Image (cartoon, rainbow, N blue to C red):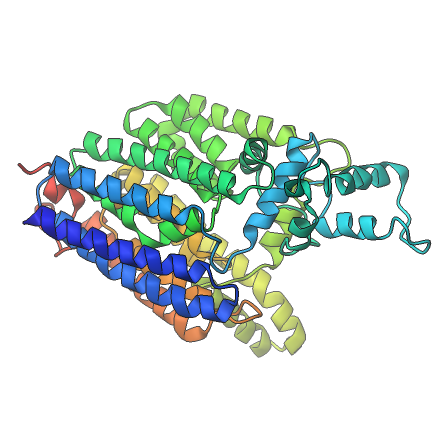
Length: 489
């Protein structure tokens, strides 16, 4: 009976995936939103019902096989679809071609290349020094290299978002983009295939961690069927799955007392996405000097390859860190509070608006440092399993961040399969509502209230259960301790 119920839920998820396919066919953003948001919410209903079913049932190999087969099917269906409400992949494809031809992707912004190309035959064109002109000319030549129409990267480069900003993606992500180019130049399918491959590898490690911790392996349904992950990886091709893989490998290394492997994995994860660097501070005790050394060595070698004289490798990342804001939660409250305080102190309104953003960044940075310090040094924090500490740290980071895109949270799904987290599950199901932003990428306030107000309360509840609740008692589904259901037979 339970297998039949799970099969029906799998069919319901399949229907939601097919609705996503329909949304992917829409070129008009408004119409795509009208199809995608209901599809996501529809899928979340079946996803949560699947979690409830798995919670009640023993660890049946047939259930596990159905979960894995259905998850793979959903990804195969979404792989060839056009990304829904996304254009980040144009930057991925361009960066991959630049690196594949032995050039530094951090050296020039896309707009500089297009400006140089357009001004070649213009007598009034901007003059460049010989070295810079040579670099731009080499990249302009990449716009059309080869005989195939697929080699024409002009349309791709012209659709890169934020074209005046050099790439923000770290070296390991650049290697992924280049590998996709080598597989098939300009192919989004090749890129998304690699993204899904690393997602599946991360799920394999999560499955191993579930078995090692004595938990039911069927909890893999959380990352396997989560609608957010299906959209962001198989459909949109976001490269975050690379970081998720290395982060989960680090977690597996720490769980098996392999500090060297864990340190190296965290270093490589930080070369894929910036946020894993927080785990170095969080895990400094179990990593030891060998793990910390290998992490530092990975970072040095990864970025060292892109640090020739005169190239600002971190310019794009600096622009992102200083000025970008999107769908922020606690950061928005901190910025508004800072602006109110500055106005009350007599600052000019324009100056108050200018200073409120940096002040909010400092405040949120202090709050996050406090979370990391508590987890790393307080006896209650140090008593938590490494995977649980990472879940709490990363959830706090995303709640405090000035930029919270839905795909950032994909790493939470793997950790939430290992530990109960009301806040993580809430964020995973509600963050795609941010796709209802307007043309200026402003998310309506009511959506941010729906996303973050419950998440903050649920995080406090999580901390109570994880750190202060008496052993032997458990909250009701779906937030019981995952080890309440250890391999029941």
